[in-house]
Image 1 (tube, helix red, strand yellow):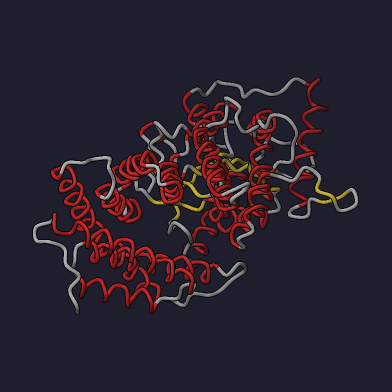
Image 2: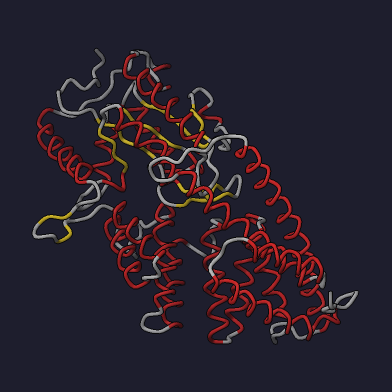
Length: 483
C-alpha cells in the first residue's frame, strides 16, 4: 500500500478545495454561486459515501487557518478541487495536494472554464452551472458521475497526481511521528466543527467560535430579511474569523465577504447614511478598488459613489461613479454596468464637470450609444433564458430537498424582470416610447415586489427631467412622444 494511505479506523475524510459565496468568472463575465455547487452537487455525494466532508470555511479554529488547510491537503483521504471561476487559491492548493499525495485527488469545474494549459494532462470532470441556480437534471447527472469517480479513486492504485505520474520513484512525504499527536488533535477539532453542523452552540446556548460558513449563511439570511445591522455584525465576524479587517494579508479571496459586509454597512445607515456609505467605500479599499479588475468590486464602488452623489451632491462622487461603471462596462460589458453608465453620463451633462457644449453633446451621444448596446444585450439575454426554459419544459422537473427547481425559477424570474426594466430604460433614453412602454408592461407582468416598481418610476422621472432639459443636444432631438 502506498505510504500516504490512511490505515486508521477513523472515518475517512474528504477536503474540498474551492471558493465560497458568489464569485465572478472573469472569462465569461458570469456570477456563480459556489455555495450552491458545494451544498447541492458535492457535499451530499461525499456524505452518502460515509466520508466526512469539510471545506475551509467550515473549519472551527483559532489563529491561522493555514495549519489546518495544509494538514487537510496532506492527510485527507480524498481531495476534491473545484476550479470554477479559475480561482487562484484553488489552483495553488491543488498543486500542493498533487505534490503531497500520489492519488485520491479529483478535479472538477463548471463546464465553461477555459481548460488551463498546465492542466491538460489532468482530467477535469465538468458540471453545468446556471449562475444563481443548477438544473435538477444536471444535479442528478453530476451526483452520479461524482459518486462513481469517488468509488473509482478509492479502489484504484494508479496515481492521479501528475507529479507522481512523471516522477515515478518519488516517495510521498509524511509528518514526523512526534507531531502525530498534535495533528490528531487538529483533525478532531475540525471533525467536531463539521459534526456540530449548524448547531454550533454549547456553554448554555452561547455561540462557541462559529465557522465562517455559518456566519456567512446567517448574514445572507439577515440581508434577505433587511436586518442590515445584524448582517453587518455577522459578516464582520466572518471576516474576523478569517483574518482581521485591515491586515496586510487580506486579499481578493475575501472579496465575497467584504462585498457583503460593505452592502450591509451602507444599508444599515449607522451612524448616519453618509458615514455608512463612506465606511462601505473604505472597506472596498481592502480589495484595491483603484486597480482591481474584479467587476463586482468595481460595480459596488460605483453604486456607493452614485449614492454619495445623490446624498451629498458633490461632483467628485459623480466623477468617481462614472469611472467605476465605465471600467466595469468595459471589463464585463453587461446590461447592469451599461444602463448605469448611460444614466450617469446624462447626470454629468447636468453638472459643471464639463462646461462646453461639445463636451455635453459628447456625453449625450455616448449615453445613447451605450443604451443601444444595452438593448442588444437585453435581447440576447432574453433569448438565452427563454431557449433554456423551452428545453426545460420538455422535462419533468422534480422538486427535491432544498427545492432546487424552485430556486432556479426564482433566479430566472428575477433575471427576466431586470432584462425588461433595463430594456425599457434604454428605449426611454433613446426616445423610443412605444418600445419603452412595451418593455415596461412586460416587466410589470413579471412577479416582483410592489416597492420595486415605485422606486423605478421615481428613477424614470429623474431621467425624464434630464432628457427634457438636454435632449435637444441629440440629432434628432429627444422627445417624449405620446403613444
